[in-house]
Amino acid sequence: SGRIRDIVTVMSGDVPRRRGVLGRRDFRCLWGGEAISDLGSAVSGVVLPLVAVVYLHTGAFAVGALVTGRYQRVRESVLLRTLGASRGQILRILVVEYFALGFLSALTGILLAILAAWALSALVFKVAFAVAWRPLLIAFLGVPAITVITGLLISRGILNQPPLAILREEG
Image (tube, rainbow, N blue to C red; front, side):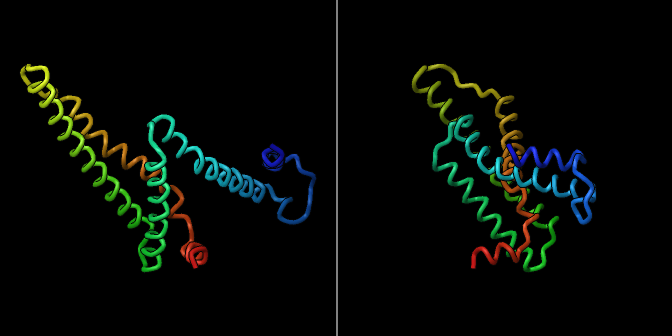
C-alpha cells in the first residue's frame, strides 16, 4: 500500500518542486501509468488462473494448459518478430488460431451433445428424439467468440515484449 500511496502522490502533483525528471509532471504521469500497468499485469497473472479454477471449475491440468499456452505464444511471437512479422500479422495469427480452436471445440461439443441426447431419448427414456436448434446455434456462434476473447486476454502483452529480452531470458 506504500507504493500505491507514492504513485497517487506523484501523479497528483503534490511533490515538492525539483529539478530533473521527477520535477516534470508528464514524466510522473508516465511513470505512474507504467507502475499501475505493471501492477495490473502482475495481478492478472494471478487472478486469471484463479478465476478459471473457481468459476469454470477447471483443474490444475487446465490451468497448466493456459499457462503453457501463453508461454508458447510468447516464444512464437518472438520467433515471428525476429523473422520480420509485424504486430498486426501476429495478432491476426492469434485470432485465427483461437477462432479455429473455438470452432472445432464448438463443433465437437455440439456433435457429442446431439449424440448423447439421442442415446438418452431413444435408449433410456424411449421417447422421440428432437433437436433444439436455437441453443446449439448460440453455442456454435458463442464458443468461438468466447475462445477468441479469452485467448487474446491471456495473450495480452505478448506483442509488447521486445524479442531480445525474451531471447536473453531463455538463453
